Amino acid sequence: MLFAEMLGEERKLGEKRILELLEKMEEAGLSPDISRLKREPEYLEKMLEKFHLSDFDQ
Image (tube, rainbow, N blue to C red; front, side):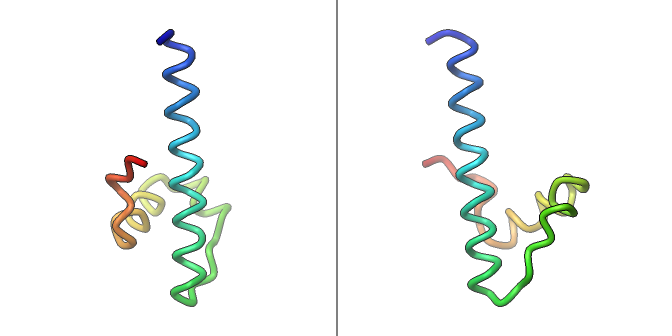
């Protein structure tokens, strides 16, 4: 696999993980602040850990 293909796969996994996070936040009754998730990597990581998605590998 070429390096560019590997990066593309990583990006797809990241996007899938973010979408899963948004769904779980909404299910929990939270209002996802997308701009904050983009702006603050620490907040994103905190939310991923909270919803058990930090080791997402599907």
